[in-house]
Image (cartoon, rainbow, N blue to C red):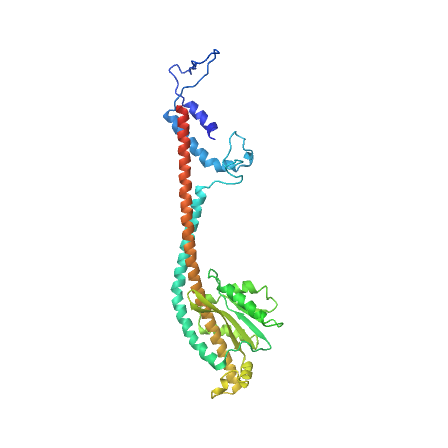
Length: 370
């Protein structure tokens, strides 16, 4: 491969005789009065260093020469490039570049650091979010016992509210919310429910499929503190749609690795009054003091909507942090495994390159001496 580059350098370092001429050697077995010219020479130190420099230069430029458009023919210079129409190496295969592998190792190492940092951030925020979520359950459970939760009751207008996150990299919680939202919408029959989306991820997946019934989207809630006042503003936006039945789809937090898709149903004041008259809730079992029954039910239904939305946002936020922590842990492990494989590949390729160079140098030296 390197003979066309190596020959001029070797000829410059030929050990010449004192007369600076090359004497032919006549073989003893010559019977036809012919002589076989031979060149007795030995490589000098300068010639050996020149040979090593040429080998290094050829090794560095091999990949660049192979990809040059003018070298499509394998026999352009009388030699074959590795991987070009060679029976041992299939056509189209390429050699491994140490520089490319080193760059890939660096990028995978950076990704591993980022995922590890994201895991620690999610773990540090999870405890506080879980505490607030558990306290919010104390507001929802008494309202459910008082007003009931009957998802099968029909109403004139139904509003579906999927709750998702604004950011990704948190596993499949957003896809689960979207999937259950489509199932709930399909159970409504011929009347497709209205849709108000909370979160950027659900909006990206549902806005095209339900463009005709989409009434609005609420995003960037993660940029403000999640308080009951924030949930009240969201619930006012939902109640302004004028629907009699509201179905809120969210992920209920159970553990760091377990989340349960949940559908919470909230009715308007008129629907709660009808349910109380038919005995579907325990509202009439309590003695009421204060305003009239209709006004009291109106205030109670609005407060119930705010409580359910507040709990749904906290449950989904806690589930998001737990799922992100688990996903980033898995990503960190995968990046570590990939980095180990790339390191092994890099070391093997480097060792093979060194071994090949040594073989070429030894072979060249043996050919010069023999």
